[in-house]
Length: 296
Image (cartoon, rainbow, N blue to C red; front, side, top):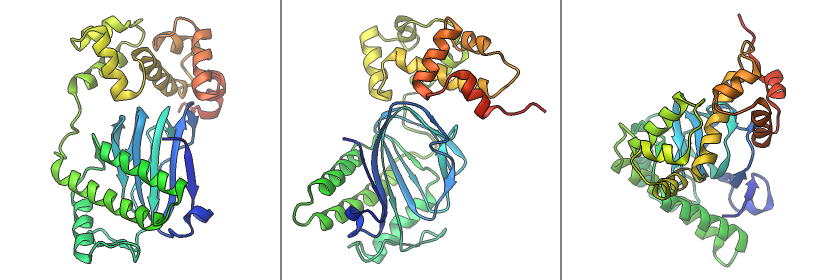
């Protein structure tokens, strides 16, 4: 999917007053403050195409990988775990609802062909399932792609087709919620344990072979699995973890930048500074000035 952005009041959305925003964004650098936690009065859906995203939805922390989908109900808070948009590609859509309340009463509007009963059932499923994170939702990715194509091509009947695809997205989310075990994400535990081990020993100079051994795979199979889950090669994935930990430490003014560099696994402060600026647009010192929390 190519990058794409439509916002309310743009000409492409004149026929769709219920679509507040539709976008596909490829983010190549970490942009601080680019995804601050906010609550809105509309329905939000996010689909991860590639990368790894730390998001907080309704005060619950989730990690999203390619093929995962997040939905945010009206009134719920959503944003990056560190108020930033991580590196990767994500598609999203913001939708205004005619009616929605905490009991699950849902009305989409005159554009929808779903019956009142169907809307009510979907609304109740959305409210009753305490899970805003859905895994392995590639069908949702196909819907986002189809919607983008319809907007771009604007062939005969495209408005009706887009509304139909939006309806399909609601139905898909509701059906997935009824099938997915909401007590835990359907995600390989070995991969989660690997990330935990890496974070605990970031100062170690991990090789691909060592990381692969931790999960009992050969180098090639391991690299393919990491790529499929995160969109990154193993070493680039490790660099993103290092930078993510460095961001936390830089907010502490009592820790020297050189110590941070070594603690998170960079072989020198210069290597750390170069990599940090490449991924964030700031040097470590510049970031610290902007984000330091005073000591009490």
